[in-house]
Length: 452
Picture 1 (cartoon, rainbow, N blue to C red):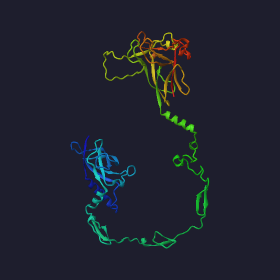
Picture 2 (tube, rainbow, N blue to C red; picture 1 turned 90 degrees about the vertical axis):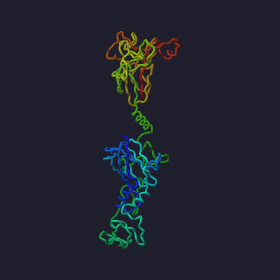
Picture 3 (cartoon, rainbow, N blue to C red; picture 1 turned 90 degrees about the horizontal axis):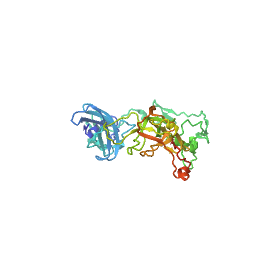
């Protein structure tokens, strides 16, 4: 909503503040640290506002443009029949309005809620305050011209010149007590009593030399230091200081580094898909369980990757007609005569699970090994699987070595996306680089999912 504000003139606001100060202080030049601000607020149609609005008050060093923000605060203001009254700088601890801010020139900007700041800004200066303070009703200071031996005095209704005489009836102010005595509360001079009988001794860790106490060498031990009294900020470190970092924290440097790494990893996690299962390994959290899907095995288009599809899909705009665009089919195990645990699930649909591993920053799938390298955690071992080599290209995925069937169902003769175990081929015979490096021709390839 757009608002309009009718502000009392800046001089009038300062007059109100000046009156308050003159009633409480004789320091006429002091600039108030709290400014009373009043206004009338109406909406864009001219109707008075009755609501609670957020008003941001900002003091600038320029009348317009960005300038420098000298002070700013936002207040939740109750507006009744369009009228409101606030005190600027009332938060003297959290956001004080220092008198030094009000050096000339200072301009006050006002913004209602998210509306643009109102223009023009009001000018507020200490000079204007002093001038207006002298022009308050019944204030005749600006016209007074007192003679020698006179000063301005308030006679109850106005300022007038009067003799500069002390009317204080306190006779103690004129009393001067002789040496060795002091002025007592009853207006008499009493002798100063010197303690000549009490003897003193140095306690633990102290030395008494005449009338001076000092700390003895090695006098401060853990017994004299309160728990948590010494902080790192109060210990001078650096080269030549003799401060041992390991001594301060009780840890070796290597332990500090290990702790830092552990804390950094505590705020990290990785996600991975466990193919062939609807649950997650120990130490990982299930994000969601799903069913594996992909493109039809006889078609060369659509996506080439395997997807872990959510079991509770949502749809936005759609058309139930057959558009023959990209097509998505459920994925089945298809491995007759292959690895027994896979062959046992021939034509069954493949489940999947998306898992989160906390305290880890790295995740990868290692083909060719069913355990992970030293220093990495094996999330699960598996078999490397993909579409048949004569079908459309697809990604290789690591299917768990203990696979399960999605809801125990099989597709029968209805075929969609198919997954086969992957075999090694060495067309170069014993000199083939795979077989030279311990792969065996026509043997199923394993894999592992690793985290760290």
